[in-house]
Image (cartoon, rainbow, N blue to C red; front, side):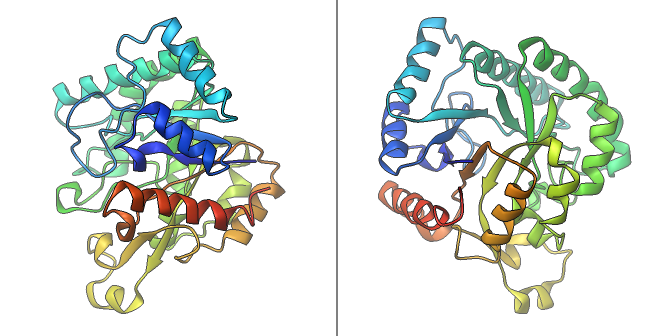
Length: 304
């Protein structure tokens, strides 16, 4: 396995500064944020360490070589919008940009891109499926043409009132994984596995590793701390941030020994990327860097 970083936490750094820091931390790879240039609509979005608009062969070679010279590989290019946004104009903007990310990955010889499936938040899973098929089959055809795999994170994107009631991502549970993987039926569609999202959904985060062993394309390392007394007060129908909080690895409820052990059981040897969303480390860029350093130091005890 290669221990790495999700670059979105270092949005104040340019590409070269970000790669330099990843290398200094002794990390081996990085999931690079590739949002469009402009203002972010939510936390950790809008970061663009690689601008895929108008990316040239020369620039692509430079970016890859810069990382390689510092013993860092790019594990994936990342863009996480709601690809099923009910606003069709916004949806098309998201799809068009994601296709550029896929083309950039091909140009840079990076085999994986990371995203969300998306969701119409006010509709059931079943009522979303026709939209999933309509939107994603053309995207997957493009991915196949460019020989780029798509790793979908299992984050429900259900944290704030504007994402209520269904969230902005359907691929949130083993049941939904089975449904969507069968519906879209493409070897280029898989999972970006984050154990933390299963904890607050009260889903076993170890067992699915074995069932979906051939579909795990990429892995995130983020921790979550549940507050039982808060959950007992507001209940599971509340927005999740009322009873849980994202933490750096080692400060939450994920058993990292069991998690990494399960990944070794299935022979997973690809990227394991630290994802920082801990508000305790958001005061400054130096705070964010310290979170990465602490997380890397901790996870090096497990990632082999």
